[in-house]
Image (cartoon, rainbow, N blue to C red; front, side):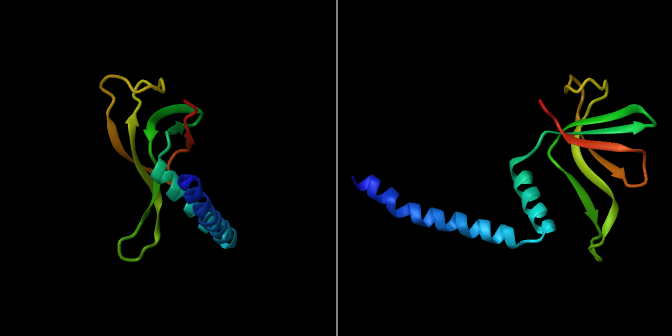
Length: 122
């Protein structure tokens, strides 16, 4: 009986917190909502894949990427024209981390060859 009563007392607080979150999120700009979504995603992690192309040919693939970040200047806080992250270099391009394939740091320039970043369906 006391446990049910305790849960009944907590329910209004939980509903109020959920309602406040919905109101705050709906009042945010689209960019702020995206930042919130990315921060939640960064906390939970993703299984990203980065593919780099030369023309129509796949030349590099990085797998098991937690996130890709935009570089910002230390002093001026201005976004730099490249993205960076950590992932496993898939040397044989089979989409599976193999023996000897290590986790590496990478950078991709906005001015480089085309690339595609997506969440792995596996």
